[in-house]
Length: 310
Image 1 (tube, rainbow, N blue to C red):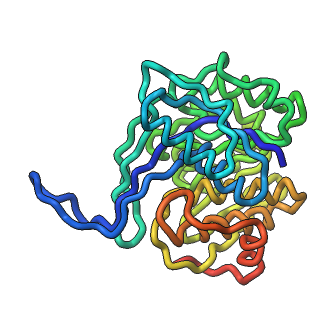
Image 2 (cartoon, rainbow, N blue to C red):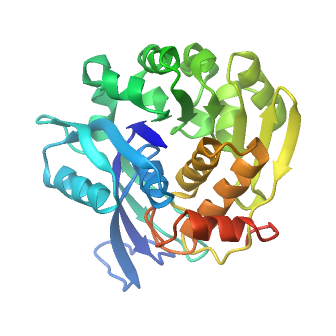
């Protein structure tokens, strides 16, 4: 599997556990503070590399120290960063995530250089030569730009997948409609399906996205696993039991597992099972890069009976 992960790259600063922010200049002690590479492109790239894919990241970051660290973390994780362009006048995207004891993760986010990525930055030859293109956060670069990139991939028989970034409340159908005819695998969460489709039900929303051109919708639902919606029907795939430490990067890990399984020729349900397994392995620790697992370890978990996560 030779994949280009294009789009959102973020440096996450994670603090755990945080029950409340101290008032004024107060202070509190925490158990852990970590910095990790993340984002709908960057986080997915890390897990894909663990699962045995050859991964090249593409996107925009700053020339600041944050960007330097982000590059080192991606490279340490086995991701080729040669297609990440650097901006002198824009900061690298970053988030501060105070992780609650139950694993919830409110976010303080800087958009940074991600929104500056354009057609002149795309490694067109690499996209054409890849077996897979995963585009994370198309709404940040605009539907027309995203559609051009995805159409180019399709023209060269590159399998295309898309994950969204914005919360559903900030989404609209017009933000993604032009690119849907070029998307083989759409991998949002349930909130995004509702927000971007404008529907009140996940299955109805997913069917609207299919009708607009998407080949398959696999929507994650947190502890409830995932729901698959295709032209052939609807299927739910339960999550795996895990003691949740942090849900950061679980959606990206699901995307990586789904795509890796698809590249191996597995059917959509098996793809979602491996996606849920990868997400469970990441949820057991702090950050998108948690865990030293590989494809064999993810497959071993996938072979157990899925149950609702704790």
